[in-house]
Image 1 (cartoon, helix red, strand yellow):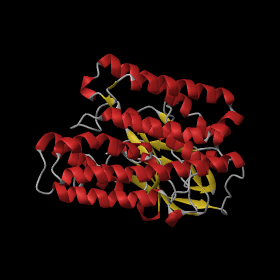
Image 2 (cartoon, rainbow, N blue to C red; image 1 turned 135 degrees about the vertical axis):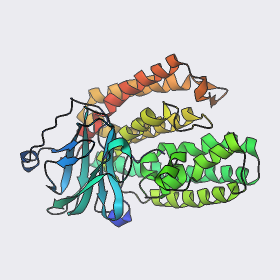
Image 3 (cartoon, rainbow, N blue to C red; image 1 turned 120 degrees about the horizontal axis):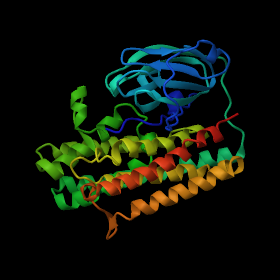
Length: 385
């Protein structure tokens, strides 16, 4: 299951907007947590180990809160910020041992939240309360930022509609027992999900129900959604309950499509979401782990890459005004990776992941890393002052 990468505010938490951490790795982990950093307006240092999650401060003022997470353990770790009701409002994942990652969370109103480290990236994590004080913080008054937000909301709405339309056709083929048609429609039906994956993953159990891989069984959950039907179509054959699974998938997609249109992004959430989508490629798509039965991973790669580029395209006027050199570098890197990815299409469809050579995968990885490094700079450029 693709883990949540960007948490945008829904109606229940309209006063809160979350921002995903920058994915670029920085220095080796600094295991010292100073309580003076946050008080002085600096980042809150998080010392994550295999058995502890130590924060240099457990309170902060409303506004942009920066967490500097260092993994001093032996397991890959994650860091989460939860709102009331266990809603994940932000996370930074894939923090390998010895690495430091930064997470910026824009919290516009005071309240009580929860922080958590997840050594091994499993379980509920090592949790502790976190308090935000002060008064509500107004959003940016920059007209270019306001236009970017409106454009991104329109993009999400369009993709949500396409997700629903594609899933309806896919489900109809499954229920009709037309395996060949369902296989043909499967990757294209999922494509819009991948473009707005950070938004779509914001709504609790809907994400694992829709997009959970078989691993969710180990976490005590039922294996349903796209990937359960993927297994039925490519491995086990349609089962007696495949139609029921398909009906539930469609109902869940209808719900997620409607809810996705209610998000209230900021420039930070848009830019960090763009980076988070590239993280999704790095941790699941380029490795061939996402589509383990159909091997249609390059379609998911395309969706994540397109979603990242479209998100940053809405911010183009802002980035160009503040750092034209960075915008030029983004254009170059996106162009390079798009060209490389498209070279793996044959007759309009992407080849199976299993057809890629080690050299192909390495080339995609190198280009992705180069792009990710540039995209990781955007949040710092667009951060509200």
